[in-house]
Image 1 (tube, rainbow, N blue to C red):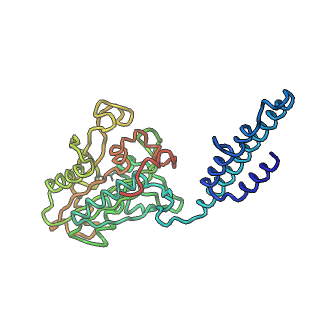
Image 2: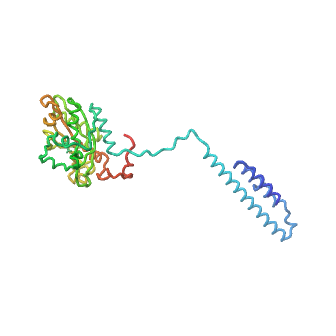
Image 3: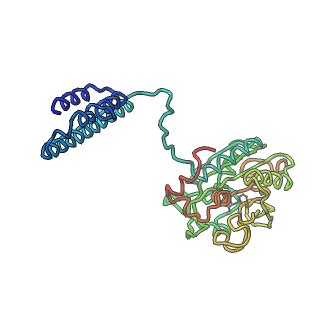
Length: 339
Ligand code: PHE
């Protein structure tokens, strides 16, 4: 038995694979294995009860020892195999995927709208967050004593400039720079001194549009607005047009869309009215054209100020505006990384 132990130990040390190990197991512990045969090699009739007991004990001992030694050898070979596999380079494997983050829903909507308008030959402008009073108000036919200034509570800066309250502040800048004819959109961040609730933020995005040319009429305005909404929502959105007042358009309109969060039944987002104010618009006031150096006798145009933040809320079914500026990764990670 002792000799068998020594042999098995050296056989196991030489085994280089699990297959070889299995052969060793059969050679020692199989039906005709050398350890199994030990019990057959003994004539139990010739042994005293004492000797029989002694043999049985030692036979079981060596069997258990052999099983244990085989299990250890097998574990050693498996571990070696695994680390070998880990160290090997498989050039056909795809690379490890890196998490890329995602685009903000407002960015996604903005990119989509920019594509739509570029398809209609509009150029894209930007403007400034910190703006002069002149462009935000006066040049838009809103002089200092005009009650319309109170419609938009303003963050004034100590140097007399302001945080633009609307992207309309860029209208006259665009007219000054490019003249007529002009087709332009200018998306961007706007700021108002407002109380924050489910549908109001003090920081939000608008996308302004301006089209000036000879003979532009309300029909052009409605046509472009419809093209825009049809493409953005990829569905038949119910809209309504109401008269709206803005000093820099005449006539002015409010284009509302049926609330897509509640389907028009009324909810927190639409203040239980079933409608969302989405698209204030109108025909550019002749005074604004003049401020921009464009002759209102020769040119006319329309302008609109799309609420980009609200549009994103409608498109993605976001019921709460405060999520937009929250930086909450659980919210943000629901959006794709590209359009
Ligand atoms: N600037 C206006 C606002 O923010 C919206 C508007 C833009 C209205 C263009 C008419 C034309 O309320």
